[in-house]
Length: 179
Image (cartoon, helix red, strand yellow):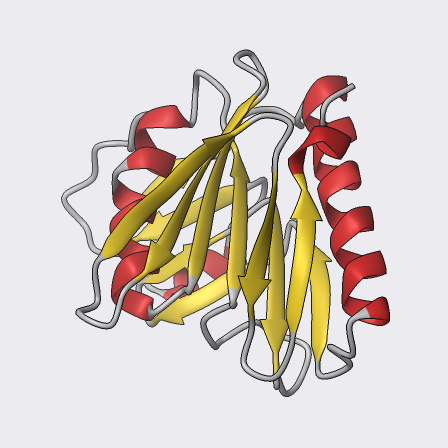
């Protein structure tokens, strides 16, 4: 979705008063699409379920899986990733960079997910950013490098990969997210 054209610069305080579903990126409001469809929801649930199971069996007890949570990056930036893994968090609000972010791409969000959010997550230090394309049955995995830039690891369809978190490593099987 395109940004609504405003001359004003909005803040987190403004955002918290709005009705409906929005994201706020560097002071610009973006209306969220209507609620995600069934395919999107099935993939999101499959990702979250697998991550939850893997975290519990790989000794990642300091980490949690969360779906559709507001990630408050700054006073003028709040985004809502589809699925995240966050470790060593405090409180009920997500204010620190997740270790892993999955965004499930739809035609209305593709540009924002591939550009604005890509840059935000890179800048904030999100270690793994995965763009999931349901229509293609493909997920593009990016890993943050020591120089602060993302490197594309691969396109995944049926393959598995490992995510190295702070004190644990978990394996993720992409073949299990497609119906």
